[in-house]
Image 1: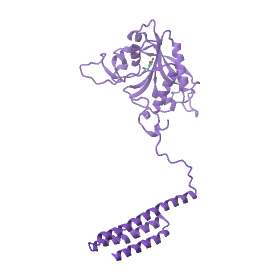
Image 2: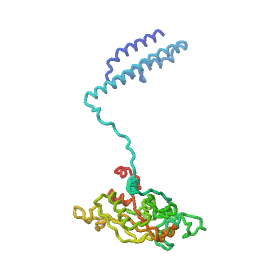
Image 3: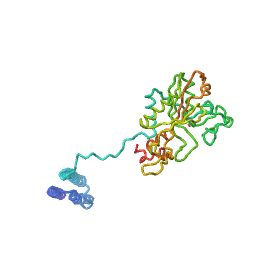
Image 4: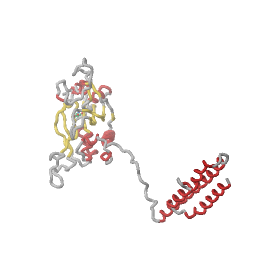
Length: 358
Ligand code: DAH
C-alpha cells in the first residue's frame, strides 16, 4: 500500500509540474492520454488492482480513483482556459463581432393568392361592401337553376362540374343534386333570400371545375360581388368596378366594358384592363409580339352585369322595383397578371422557392 501511495504522489507531482506546459488542445490530448488513456499511468494502476490482496483492494481503488478525479478536473479547467484564450486570440486577429448572427429559419408569409384576396376585400370594404362566405358544396338549384341556368344549359355538363356522389335514388337535375360549386354566384341567391336590400356584398371563396392546364386549375378562387337597391344602374356598375381596378392595378390603368352574355345578368359586360405586360402597345420593348394579351393590348379581368329580373323573381324580390348589379372576379387571374406568372399550377405546388418571392 505504501508503495502505491508513493506512486500516486509521484504521478500527481509529475502531472502538476507538466500542466503549465500544456498550451494547446493538442497538448491537452497528449496529457490526457499519458495519464488516463488506455495505457495511461493511472489506468495501468487500476488494471493492477486485481493482483492486490483482497483486504487492500477497497482502499487502493479509492486512492487511485481520487487521483483520477483530480486529474479530470484539472483537465477540465485547462480546457476552458484554452478555449477562452483562443477566443481572445481570435478577437484580436480581427473577428467582427458586430456582424449579424446567422439566420437559420425564415419567418412564414402569406400565400400570394391570400395576399390578392385580402387586397380585393380591403378595396371593396373601403367602398362600403361587407364580406359574406357561402358553402363550397351546393345544390344544383343554387348553383344553376336559381341563376337562370336551366337543366339543359351547357355549363351543367358532367364535363365541367364535379357532382358529389349520392345514393342512386337521388337522380340528376333534381333540386337536391349536390355538387362542388362551379362559381361563387350561388351565394348571391343565399344573400338575397336572407337579407333585405339595400345590399352591398362581396363573397370570396374556392370554386371547382373539371379543368386542368396552364391557365386552369380544378380548384381556384373567385370573388363575387352584388349591389342591390333602389335605382342602381349600369353607371354604378361602371363606377364601382373602375374604381376597384384603379386601386388594384394603378390609377392610370385604362378600363373598358364589352357587351357579353351571362344567364344571371341582363345586360352583361365583360371588363378588360389595358395589358399590364405591354402597357397596351401589343408589342414588347424588343419589338416581339405580346403573347399575354395575344396582341390585343387588353386583358379580360371580370364578368359583370345588371341582375337578371328572373333572378330577382327566384328570390322573391319584385324586379319592377329592385335593381342591382353583380360581378365575378378570378383571383388566380389577377395574381398571374399582377405578378407576371404564366402557369397557374405554380400556386398550388407549395414550392417554397416560388412562394418565397411574394
Ligand atoms: N359566375 C361567372 C363565372 O364563374 C362570373 C360572373 C359573371 C359572375 C358575371 C357575375 C356576373 O356575378 O355578373 O364565370
